[in-house]
View 1 (cartoon, rainbow, N blue to C red):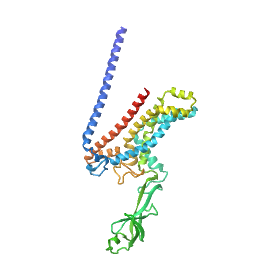
View 2 (view 1 turned 45 degrees about the vertical axis):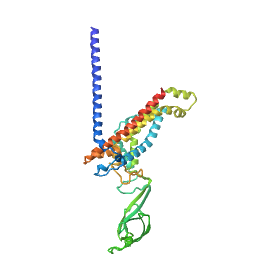
View 3 (view 1 turned 135 degrees about the vertical axis):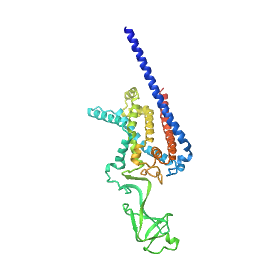
Length: 397
């Protein structure tokens, strides 16, 4: 009787195991089919738009045939470069400290565990939350520098030169130095030393209001009527910086650094934990200090795993749209391109998002083409991570 009951239980267990395996296989197959359908649809819609000019042209409003992702590629590269420069050293350094320099004091242990718990929790926070934090911390800097006003120069900035620009009677634009950068308009009522587009410096003639226009072309290009307003303009150097950062590439890069920082820390910690303790003990046995063991033994052994985690974290950063939208807005193009870190710039994910919402249906094809380019970037980065891991395991073997 007991054998019969046991046989029945074994049969039920086998049926349950088989049913569970079949269910998992069907779900996995459904996911693969959906993925294949999505990629096929994107390739079908975006492939006709893939051409060399698409990779270097900028966005043109209502002109999909002349639009491209040139500025978006440069913008994504710069934002991710800023992100990596801040997130990778801080994240790897934090992981080394948490894993290799654990405190012995009871209160320090409690603080260490609290930090570890928060890092693990932050890895699951939605990226839009980091976007809101980036707006507060980097765009406005918690309001420490006062209220930000649109089109108002920052009180704290370097690498920028302000000047006034005015149009002469002949239609030429001339400039002259600006004494107060917060005065946006300047009424010209006396002769001034100005510079034209050719770099020539001369005295600007100021004619009375109601006077007749000069007949001489040269005189017209050097004259204005009294009371005409000159508008303020600026010339930015490549090292232009300001506080707060406003809606800039630097603010977007720092926000993305916050997004991937927990991922870098956790991946680096796992790589450090994978290093056998026997290596540490052997180094300590030879009289090495804690830092010598970490620098000469642990870090070289964990480098492949750390690099793999760093590449995977960066592949997430390059595909993030929500934090960039929150910090920098939906920029599609800029007149001069990205000339300094304080400029706003388009990025690939934001460009895809904006094009997909455009009323012009042709931009949907451009959006699909941009998705293909982004997928290729992600494929290359993930392939690099797999290759690094494979070579590391092969060398260990």
